[in-house]
Image (cartoon, rainbow, N blue to C red):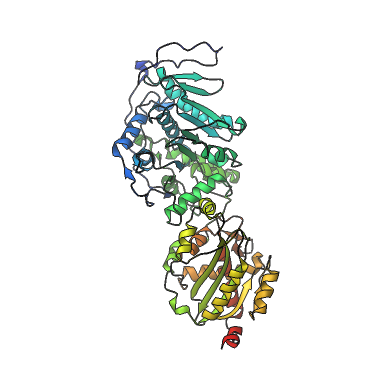
Length: 566
């Protein structure tokens, strides 16, 4: 890359040409030798779209570009910006190597979650410089975004300091310090700039790349939504977000964390999303040094070239033990362990072992659970059938058809495909057609020896009256923790001991994976819709059906439908 001739005009100190690096300031340290560690979750194994391919030359070119830069502070100052092995294997190579059939980048949104002191900011700065200077884009607009300008400026300043000490990039860049902006002299219109919630409305942005720093600090979605919809006519724009864990499970950051987990577990798909999450599991012992080593991929001994050594963690852990108020900071920042948010309730490995056939359920005694939910979202009626005990789960799930594409995008699950497979019933219009639900319950009464239906009384008065007119016995169940705790614990027991069969129902599995519990000091527990990651309505209906089994399953009486249809 050749520098553009000419001297920039004076701007009253608003800019400066980067100071050329002095050759003798350079030094060489060997690359780090830390062993490669596996993420807690990642999305690299999800199916690729037709025609996608891996361009090894492009992948290695990205690594070489970043590693040609120089560190500017600490013991690494002046040395080449060696990437850690985890950064190359899990982030840089797949991000720049995987291509779509048309040759453009496959991944358009990347989320990297890892503990502090893991080298995320330097990695992000290197990727920003690659997008600006070596991505083949005319007039690239690359933004450094965060909740406030100071946070956004951290990654920008890292890129700026790297640029100022770089013999190749320095002559190609003009730095405007007061407004935290760099313009590309070799690519007119190209620039790198800081953005934050304080920037105001982001009119006119046509980004090629954006680095979103510490996503967990975002209190609203405004800036995130503005940037993720600002790619305009760019062919391969990239949003690259980095963060540690936090505590707000309603945040856009936790949304990316959960999306990574769900794709990792095969529940969701998004081929354009690259997610890599390093950290400690939510139930891991934060005092265990083996947990520390697994959580931070850049943690090790100084002799290994680690960005942070184990002694630092020991000092911080001692402080956290002695001062309980420091524990959450240690867990979120140094272990990237989410705290104060939804915990996983069901063991999904055990759930997956409950994938037996439900064909034998026809004609058996059964109890139903009904969760009408909101009229615009999932409504669920779930039957639990068995021979003297709960054995088979048969869900009937409904969703309004209008806006189904937007709902798939929002929840990142294939609703239309599930409907084609007969696993979901789409009803015409913008709201759930309760007549279709009523008809499904009638159908269930014919298929099974349906004893009764347990329901949530919210917004169900007229619908329950209609079902009672059909001859069904209906029992309401309060949704408080005392009422729901016994059947919730029974579900946990049945799944753990693999005594249920659900035939591998993918929609039901997705909802099961979303459940987080609410507990009280007495040990009672219930599914919490407020803190669960996504939809859990069929699981709530399942729990209400189990309540019927527990309360009335041993009663000897004929089903109302035995009289009606005999």
